[in-house]
Amino acid sequence: MAASMYQRDPRAGLFLGGSRVSGAEVRDQNVQAAQTVSNILKSSLGPVGLDKMLVDNVGDVTITNDGATILSLIEVSHPAARILVSLATQQDKEVGDGTTSVVLLASELLRRANELVRNKIHPTTVIAGYRLACKEACRFMADQLSTKVDKLGRDALVNVAKTSMSSKILAADDDFFAPLAVDAMLAVKTVNPRGEKKYPVKAVNVLKAHGKSARESFMVKGYALNCTVASQAMKTRIPNAKIACLDMNLAKQRMHLGVHITIDDPEQLEAIRARESEITLERVRKILATGANVILTTKGIDDLVLKEFVEAGAMAVRRCRKEDLRRIARATGATLVSSLANLDGEETFEASSLGFAEEVVQERISDDELILVRGTKVVSSSSIILRGANDYMLDEMERALHDALSIIKRTLESGSVVPGGGAVETALSIYLENYATTLGSREQLAIAEFASALLVIPKTLALNAAKDSTDLVAKLRAYHNAAQSVSPEDPKRGLIFYGLDLLNGEVIDNRAAGVLEPTMSKIKSLKAALEAATSLLRIDDSITVTPDQK
Ligand code: ADP
Image (cartoon, rainbow, N blue to C red; front, top):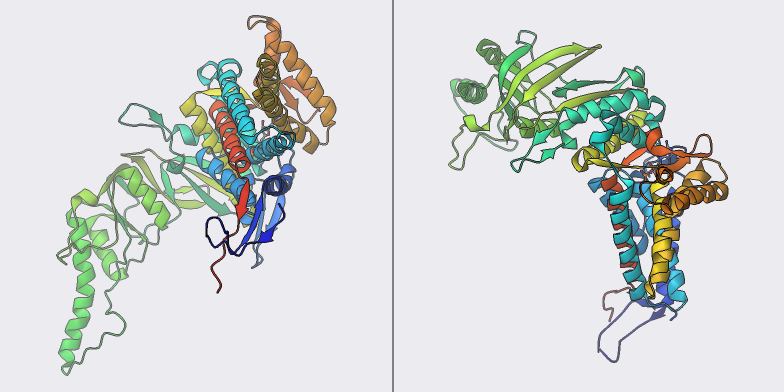
């Protein structure tokens, strides 16, 4: 039905003051919107994908090829396109990588589903077929395509990190950064009360420093703060640290703006001044009385109170980033205190607000003075200090590193990997094609389309690498078909791990070549793409509701 203005729906007696689009037209519009989004991302998929330069309205520039970052920066107004944007954001949050792939796959699934609907297959049947295909694909992937990390050892982790970095700015130095990221993640291992091993990405602190080359980046165990002690006279090493994390000013207390006091005796003025200084000193003494020997604050510390810290043999650091203190508080078991006042208005500082670490030291590491919090008691932490020429590079390096850290976390937590470079998608495509022919129901068509949709990944990868994608994908399919037509014990079965070698334009064993991705992230992206595509497919009416204008 053509878009039309509805004044009043006579049957329901409802006022629908907006426009309404339904049936095939709304589906076409949604497909078009999804295609537009995926076309933007297409050229940046894979290790040889290209970058996008995004300029915002104040002229800030971001250069990236990370799908989620691109989509979060561009302005998208079509509701269907926005669903894909949130799909990428969600994937970034949950998995950390695979954001471009998930959007490409979702839009391809949607496009193909729409074709089926045009050929008179009911959307519900298509959705049922897609769901079945996704379920079978995940099962096949877990059973036949994944390899346990224990079998492959630490190399698998390094390779997973390299694969994730290969499409990003760190690609040229992946042999340097991949082991660095693996060490950083291994250093933050914690075991939760249920006995499960956890690797929180947030426990890895990434600091960015201008200057020097990327290869002069380094990793340290412990939480690194880009600050120095507040006074030269302070100790720079505190073993058995009891840490107070403060979000308050330890400066002379000043009366609030607008407070008006009339004094007729100059001595009283002096008394007020003395009291102003005393209040802060009292606070500091209360904090030190609990045994705190490291005081970190996000705000300032007056010279007036520095003496107090020096005499108590404590270390004080001012102007820490709030985010850093939040994380240190989490890692050491401290509470970030923003006021000493309790509910009764009295000022106290509880010893229970302190956090613990084996030591806090100020160290000079390759020209940088850093404060390191080592051996944090609740969650271990590690820090990576990134060096780079300018802000754009450092930001993109940080994003790439974050993706790699998330992928290492997924691999460590799920314990299995699959070959990348289109190997999984092609294997699943062949498997589903064969599976579809075993079914005698209508879903067969949808499953076959799901199988073809998966090929968008190897096709785009080859295309971006300036290779003949038709040729390469046909060859890859032939390999996988051969692998799946023999029994699992047959040596030919090894062909199932074959994927694209994008530099040489060949088909190679990507498991042996170390192009690996965590199984869990592939499964998650398949499921997420399916959900996004089906939720758009289910829409057959789009009504813009505008307020009643009488
Ligand atoms: P995403 O945002 O989806 O992670 P990327 O641009 O990182 O997109 O590309 C990921 C794709 O590139 C995956 O399909 C992965 O298998 C593939 N890939 C990564 N490294 C290689 C490589 N060295 N050879 C072939 N394919 C690779």
